[in-house]
Image 1 (tube, rainbow over the protein chains, first blue to last red):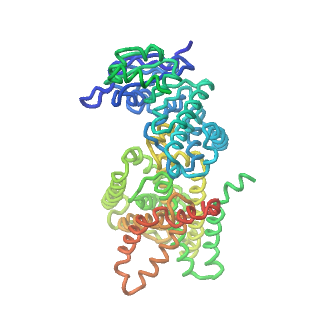
Image 2: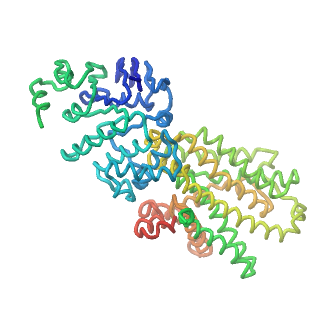
Image 3: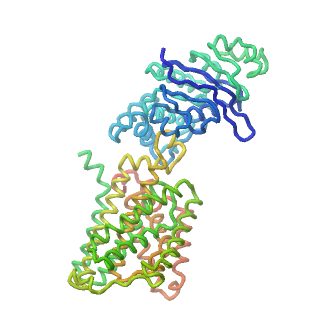
Length: 250
Length: 323
């Protein structure tokens, strides 16, 4: 099994705030890694460190055998690392198709405009936005904007996809669709790290899970191991009984 | 066929430039030629500014610095070194492009109002610098040696030649604008305009893209500067770096529609027309600049997309033609 991403002792501070402390893990190719933890645990900060938005103070990030720790985020994108944002960042006054074409044009494959348009067509079909291709991105609703984020990331044909709360704010049927989409993405051979608060979904799709609390990695393991880990239940959910109830919920 | 359709947006701009070029020829009128020259010049400058303002989303309040800077270099080589006007225009374009490249590396990391302020500062600093530069004649500037025109068959012929070169430069500015808009480079610029951070996460190397946009937007103004001061016969700091002209260019781009090829053309026509009326009217002749200020305010408040943008939003069928 080849290691796609290796995060080694990553520490990030914002002034006096210790946002990440010595986070270490390896991610083999083809896996889905779930990243969970209470609000403010440092999950999105970890994404920002991994893809070069805020380089960490300490530690190294190795992506496809290359040290990318201090590289700018656009080089990460060009090497095949794509992400979605927790707070959607559409290019408002461009059409949905153009948004996706940006991903294809400037991502790993560095496509020409013509090819990018074909890729956009295919990816929009895949995420279910084909009908909206000619609309301005600003006119989409939140669920559609989340799909647009995903389409843009996929259009770059990444090796690694960072999904930041793609399920947040969606209704149950939308969540079901999105989970199916995530599974289909994995079938295409794309490795995924997903930050998620919807427990059932993340337990369902992840091969492995890492739990962060106050910037520290408090647990790592399979979904079964994590759901029975008392430390996790206490830190993350506070009340073990509530945790059991949440996990049992259909 | 598909390729032809992609370039449909260039059709109207080409027709406009052709009409503006032929109008004085057909009417055989020097006054019309002067009017046409002024409008073509405004179109060329506004279209260049639009590459930065409209496509990239960076507001340059001091864009006229490239016009003056290129103008000085070009006129210097034509007047003092005896080079041809063609070489002078080339030198002007290169000088302004280089200036933009160096400035871009320094100030394009600023965003929003800070960038706009920096561009004003650069224009004023450049004017003060040239004002004290003996090589370029200091505050007196440079007066074109009359014998220079002889090479082109006299002053009248040189003036006529300048008009056709101006038409060519305007055409070039519009082709550049169109090519940027329809290219992958342009898509990257528009991504930067909409959300620079998101664009970078998607792999757009924003610092490079912005720098090249700035360089592209500076070259034609540099060339136009050389041509204008060659035709004018002299150059001095206040006419080379007039801040109010910078603001007039902004009004033209915003009025016509930023981020479109046609917008700056419409804006240049409308603004020059209005200005022509205002400076000859008794009431407005002293306050015509404040009218442009009010106009800019009204546009930003009520039609931020400009005239072309307004039509495009309402009539989707026009989108291919009104590019």
